[in-house]
Length: 135
Image (cartoon, rainbow, N blue to C red):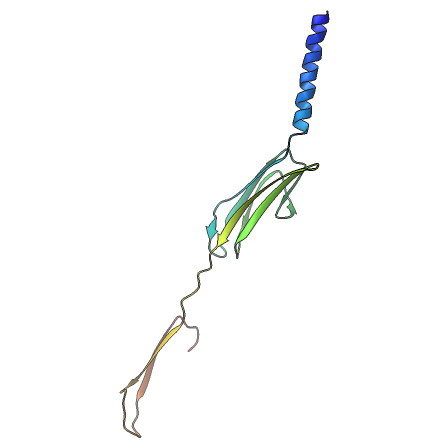
């Protein structure tokens, strides 16, 4: 009988240790973005996954343990997930670089036809403009 009691006690102790270890496991947090470089307004999917956490935040907002969100950043942005369990926390970050393409500078060319005239004579002015909204 003592041998059977020892096996039962051993199994109980092992189960208790497994429960305690899993209950104390530190949180894990992972975040990723579908694209790391975009133009302003391009869509990006931000997805995250956490484990062993009681409280999850993505960029300061409460979130589910696993999730995804489509965003359209206008400027370079870093996304952060924080997974908390008691006093323990895990963090992860992912960034999207937004490249603003500046339009080309406006240009204008002006010419007179004919380019030289005598006093009192007329000329025609002609111009061409590019990349301008008004002239």
